[in-house]
Length: 550
Image (cartoon, rainbow, N blue to C red):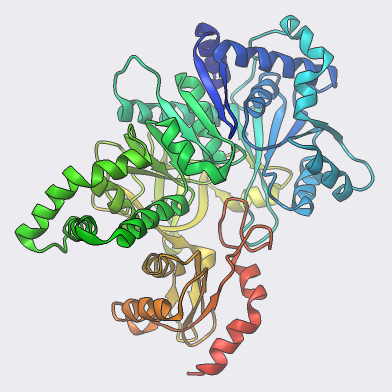
């Protein structure tokens, strides 16, 4: 039985159970399993009336919502390939992906985006329809006549084309098939069972990351398969309040949010000062192994009794774990949450690996690592420490790009482009990206990510840190955000004192405005577009090296 059959069967068996809830600023909108199936049937009726058939593509371009989930399930249930796109990307970028995927229909979340796409797609425009039209259409009333079970699908049948972020070039469409997703869900649900244990009540899950990203989508499907209560944040300005109100058992995060949460807690305590801040500082030092013997141990005991429970209550009183993926998490941040009694479970993967290659085992978490390879997946190191992966999670192809597919997969091994290492405990650690390597004129090869992470953590108010130095005689740094020169000087000096000479940063430039997706400097999931950043700040970079020529 494949993942779609499993999900539809589970929903049908528990029609009264609440499975999704939109957390809107004005009210909450829940939907039961039975109601979700009714929405799915309505969407299937609409797609059938629009003439879509198995193998056609359906672009889904909207924020997370109950309707997004229903349309996604509806399309896949009829063998229609879903192309989820990120609505915050520029119309030009979206138009390029739409021209590549050639969908028969584009389903938009709002009229403004619909208008922008009409402008960005001159000439022959695919059928553009709003989600509200799909679920309010006359065909929705005939939904009961549509079959409720998915059509038969083979493991090789594609279900989605997810476009990669495109950090250094045009995005490619990653084709994932039924077999990929079915296998991955067997792994994710097994890990969640380890985390949650045997319990009668459903998991309470909070979610804010867009479903158009592979890892976020896999969590959605895992929750549906487990009949969890998945609460969707619809307003990022209310994220902290929504998290507290949702009171989840766990939620999926990106490192940036966890680092902001840590920074906010520490800044609030520092502002208050007094006894609480002193105890917290001593407890933190002790937890990192820098405590003052018995005094540090006493501080930890006091903090666990008097301070940490209050912090945990504000973050979410029921949190059993925070799950983190998408990019490496700063070790200091992982240890911070562990000190509070909230483990951070990391995973690693790419869209091409159906989002996941490794996952932390909740029983054996190694801080700073991203867990062992998941069951049935082989990982090894290739040239230059590149991580190679083989298994049933590897994508079938890049859409309409056979040459790119052949480059990425050789003898069954997918070349991730990531540098890594295996720890003595059998876990994996991610070092950096091969294409991001900075090669100094001295010949030293430097992975910028670890240094950028250390510097960013040392400057709490910074938004991003980007290193430069390819072909130059030394490293320089761009620091964005509302930061003071003295803060950057202190952080750079401390870093330089702990690293070899060729890793020292000898110049920096402060940019008060953060790098953004809208400026074309970040990818859809927040990763640095390094070539674009280097071009955008070309004058500032040249100035740093003119002022420090040797």
